[in-house]
Amino acid sequence: DKEKLKRLRTAPAATLDGTTVQLFANIELPSDVEPVRASGATGVGLFRSEFLFMNRRGLPDEEEQFEAYKEVVEGMKGMPVTIRTLDSGADKAIDGQEITTINPALGLRAIRYCLAEPHIFNVQLRAILRASRFGKVMILIPMLSTWAEITQALLAVAAAKEQLKTEGVKFDEYVPVGGMIEVPAAAIALPMFIRKLDFLSIGTNDLIQYTLAIDRADDAVAHLYDPLHPAILNLLAGVIRTAQQHEKPVAVCGEMAGDVDLTRLLLGFGLRNFSMHPAHVLTVKQRVLSTSLPDIAPFVARILKTDEPERLQALMEKLNA
Ligand code: PEP
Ligand code: MG
Image (cartoon, helix red, strand yellow):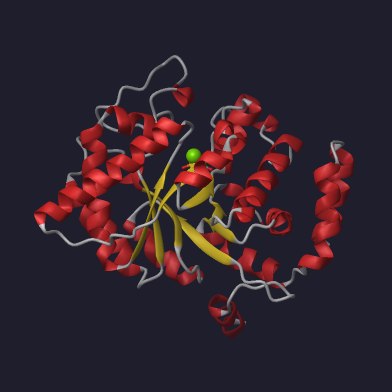
């Protein structure tokens, strides 16, 4: 059985009909690299860098961040490492950031905060770029919703590159810059994200929160937090389809990506890049290995046309049978 598990870990993730699927892992700290390697994941799809900033006095300086990013990049031995820039605010507080008590989830958080505090953003971008020469780094920007934010974020990356170049510091000139699709506006106005960014990653945790107006941290409404709401399914299918039509790489890095009951559904939407907690990688891989894309297609098409919860449940059961 141990042998079988080991074989599964190293086996490429592909469907029965031979379609390759990327299974990446989400991490919070450099110490998470070991479980990622053990899981058989072939990259880091989401490094939640804010965890380097949380639960401490002061903020990590460029050197400290650089060391942390480099440790992850080297630990992944050439496999892609997607470093998300600071996604603080709301439920993820850092020193010095004032969290508005009006509605923190809608406040000055993530990229909004970074653009309001350009020095903090610049320090982080420099550290990430410096780590990029030790492997395959990708930069992921959270919570984008407007043209101006995308433009300003890209300008900040370009400025950090210019500084490093002037200083003679080495980095990967071609480090891809992508954006999280986690605000409904981004999913709806997708073409502007496709045009300006190198890749997309759908953050279903926040996309569900903002689309359904359900605070993801509020137990009183937890029963209403529904990944299978027709609005969510249609948004997701639409984003994945549109990205594919434009040949723009798209991943899902929210909790949905690690839920084995949703693997076939996402595959049916056309998703080929999943990023999840390392603990889920093998289970999801097993499901991918047992899936035939032509067989599931009719069920997925019917699921997208259904708005009756009971009918949807029945179809989900057939899809996963
Ligand atoms: C998400 O919103 O789905 C996501 C992956 O980011 P986080 O959970 O860190 O907000
Ligand atoms: Mg998020």
